[in-house]
Amino acid sequence: MIKLVVTDIDGTLTTEGTDQVSEEIYDLVLEMKKLGIVFAAASGREYDSIYRVFEPVKDEMIFIAQNGAYVVCRGVEISRKPIRRSVFEDLLRTLKARDDCQYSTSAPEGIYLDYQNDYFYDVLTKGYKNNVYMVDDVLKADADFVKVSVFQKNGISRQIRDDLLIPHWQKDLQVVVSGKYWIDFMDKSVDKGHAVADIQKVLGISREETMAFGDNGNDIGMLKQAGESYAVANAGSSVKEVARHVAQAGPDGGVIKVLKELINTMKNENK
Image (cartoon, rainbow, N blue to C red; front, side, top):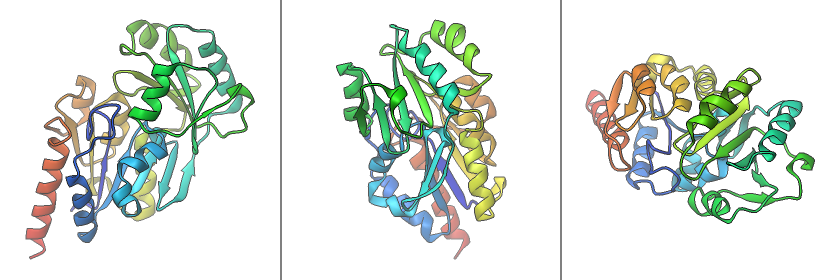
């Protein structure tokens, strides 16, 4: 019997980079709660961005933000895993020297930027609805940074992904491709799967009692931690390889359909 449902957001539950989610999900979250199922959203997004997507049911769920670096339930911080400061500073200096991408730095309270790029600022604030703090120099900011993200407007290039950033930093950091446009860097201990495992341990829920949905590389650990795992149809091949099932894609598609089936099945079993 499923007792925990965890879903990715961008590319799985919504169109990437938007807050347009099917409003059916709110009713489904409440229905699952009545059946004793805990619902969690797990995303590379910042907490405030996920919070806004799920505001109607914010007190009925768990938020796994920044790929698991920051976990919150009912406004209470469950855990945070900041990047080691020396590694953070080395990475940021490297990114500051590049002119082929934008970068953002994330703390639990929001994103810090120390340069102006109007398009990127609009992506962060109008697309993802993040809190963004403009500062003179992020390296001097008094914040607990849990994630650094690299963005390319036309999609992450192979040169950035495979030749430059990932091979150089994956020894010291957890580095994941997080959608078409992003690469995320977190502390080595951070993974959506680790966050789900921690929740399972606290709540006494097994892997077999967990259902998860995802579409990208940063979802693989989470899918492996779920007995009932779904890659949406638009997922990459590496994601589909670890998932037990494939669901339809789109905001009104697979996740909603599977959750409706789950709820109906459990209601019938409880009759």
